[in-house]
Image (tube, rainbow, N blue to C red; front, side, top):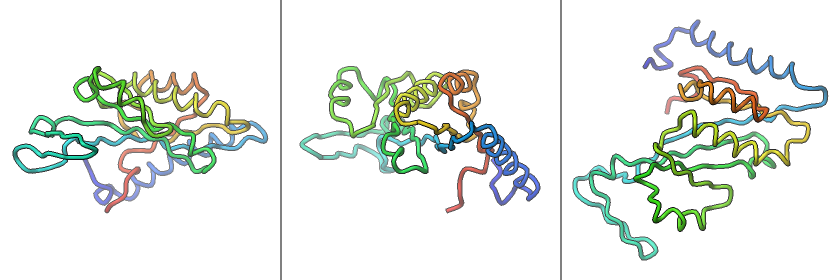
Length: 193
């Protein structure tokens, strides 16, 4: 991948202008009296065992003893988040933790789902990574959460150019739930630390 610094200025400018053109087009298309509800959708992977040493790491919390061996270093959860610029709406937006079949075991899933934080959903899937199917589920959760709150607002969801956000499933789900989608071009959705 090229970093932002390696891309030529005209390329960066063209990418930014394309996103702004979509955004401006959607604003023109708003019904009279309607306002845009801007929502960012993104995911981040979280390794189950975040330690670099060989052997087991034992954590003791709430009387639970867990061992993390080298296999756990390859197990991930995925946090899918919706973030909005409207504080009144933000507190209703879903936050989803996706775990694969090895992370969210059937035997433990009921206990895990019994006491999640408010608006937190645990999703067990074949893979922890988002795909067309999980994106459809995530957009349904967003639509259900916003349905009683939308009023005269139009959902505009900003997503990065990850290939799973470009599938027919994703576009069709957006259309089904009345969500307008804007793609943030590659190398435009992050900042240098």
